[in-house]
Length: 253
Image 1 (cartoon, rainbow, N blue to C red):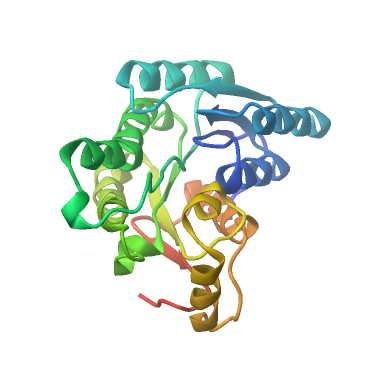
Image 2: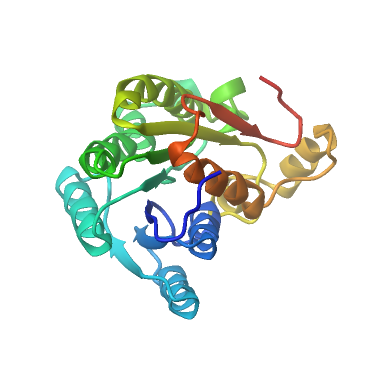
């Protein structure tokens, strides 16, 4: 495990939930941070205050990453602020709403794929030239248990995109390995306390899922942040093209 002190990290969707916990973890591990957010300024402000208290650099960058020009500008501004990039965490994603196949129209299909795949492609594409200069870099992509086993009812399109994140990760690891850039993914299961589950998961559904989890509980945001910080630190390691399943044992690849 390499030291993250002085490393430069960009975390997308870091205003709340898993992204915010990841940013906190990277700051505490010694990184300087570029905090991307789409809406909600409280989280970024608090992260910047934390960075200041730790003697680290942090700045927030608002952008709609489904807009190509905005994504390009955000990565350029983040890399300029940090003086380069060593770590990229692609955390942006969302279900939007639950729809069965009979109700899936092209605008909905495009919206979900834009949020979960186009954002990741654009940010990664723009970040790679900076990461390639780092003499060892790390990308961590947020997938989901839904990408492994299909998700709960009505999450067809979301699950499809998260499965694509797993393939994107494997293919990208082969492409970027010669440049010293390692690419991995994490696939969270039921993680309560996030905007995703607060919006889309009922207590009854969560309780039903928890009864099936061997460890007997749901996860929290720090259960995901800690492994991401570890994978980020493996910028000079031998782990690439891998997916770490974090679900309490309900699914084992």
